[in-house]
Image (tube, rainbow, N blue to C red; front, top):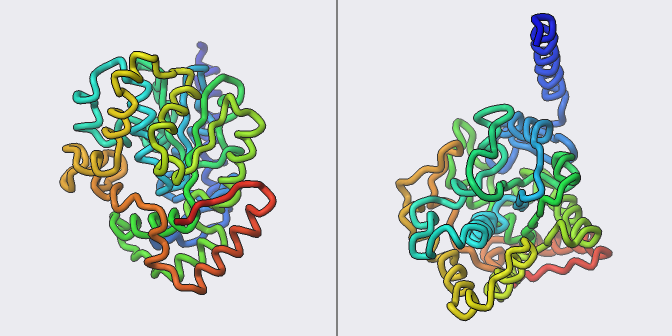
Length: 330
């Protein structure tokens, strides 16, 4: 490469950086449940801390056919889904009793895009053996274009919106929010109804993946948290089949699905050495134990007033009524 080309590349980089900063400053902004700023980018609300890593992911990620992308809204069962998919993909690497999940949090084994792109603008994602498994909270329409040009598999896990809201609100009370104080539940609920939550509006994201799963069922698998709770073994079997990594007859006879289900269960993960209260997730500065609260269906009944429930139900019916998607609230 000649000297002039190097200068040109440098100038392009500087211009891009200036454009990014100007774009960032012009974005709509709101305070989140945590009291920190979030910005509306590409139709979704993005936390200030992860804005630039997500931009880098959108710009630079080059998908390959073997990639697996796990997508969720925050606190919709993300940790559980990561543990299950990691165990399915790597089941031939070690026995269940020696799983990396015993000593490592699922978020360390299956990182968010903003964790890896927060370290470098264009990181090397292909150094580890086996298929790449990444996680994201961004909507389907905002994913990097290269994902749609390959056979990369997408698994989306949806949780009923009221439980997802309550779980997210509790999570924010536990984590370090710097100088800002998390806002009260009633005020957070008002933002939720307006779609002003991290990676929301929730209805846009859920419907985006829901519709994509019908348009391209071999590429996008849409799961519901409540179904995963109700019939975990069959759901684990279906996930493996979707990933084109079905369990063999011998594996089924030996109880491998049951073993993975037990390993990835809420109480099992919560009590793993890697998820003790003294362990912190690198890059997130969040205690690993904070990812495990209750994991129940219907916890919203303990926190929302009748008026909140009525307004939430009306909004959900308005946004999802014609889609055919139904939620299980208890």
